Image (cartoon, rainbow over all chains, first blue to last red; front, side, top):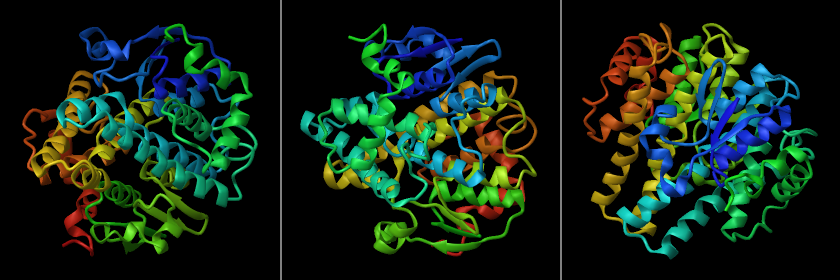
Length: 212
Length: 212
């Protein structure tokens, strides 16, 4: 199994956590986003979208972090990354998607570049944008998770799921940008419990071979 | 079953198509996005994120269109909206996510408002932004779908899946914005075959009770 990623890509970080939780080993192929390697012809043959991560195995080549993680969960069911009932699965997927659709894509490298280079936004305006979408998204998640009985030591119950796999990399981005997180005690409590697990710890950006 | 939506929300449009394909009836609760009803206290109690769609049934309240559709597919398996093998399911989910994560959230109402009101972008700059992310995303999808043997009459094989459910509303947005689609013949061919099906046709924005 081969994973195309970048140490700082939070979508690649999600896949690394999932592989770790499943106990699956993999070869790591670094795609340097700041050198624009993801837009080059060689990587476009791996993923026409020019985005990391991608995963290759004996059955094919897969893109989009959440699709990759669902694939891993279907092929290697233990430990499960989604709960058992349809309604609980919907809750976990909704938390993951609230991060993967409504926070992360707005703060992606290519979007920040467009703000600076095409819209001519200042560094301050770009930073305010970055923070705006994170705060908006995390505030809604904090309200939801603090208010729902299904929240446990992790986003859903007492074991990590797809929701935690999305939460931890998003909070890492927020921390790196210096965004205060004191308004999100439920989220940071879950984060702390995740980070105590080897799968999360070993997937961290600073632990990757291409970390700067 | 009750669906909170807005005629023009392409995420709500996805859920309507899925319900139609499953043959499920529902009550429709319009949330007027241009009047900001989604940010009001009443709707925030339905969805802390303040986004449509949401779905309520006897088991609870669900948010995030893709999570809702997977929930419907698990509870009402016929006809299936995902193929049978893990690798085919991953392909369909990746196409859906390429739209739901990497095109749609960038062109959401709240994002366009931020560009205009907070960043002070011109109408022209806002329109160019809108078009940029649609073209970038559709070009990658066209390359992928045109090049892969798994593409059939629909995005995957000969029956509509979650991928088509995301594609058709995204193309409707592009058409409404007057974006030329001649560079995407594979996508528009699939769109035409989808639109010939009653479930897609009846879910269209202009067919909804809150259409303007």
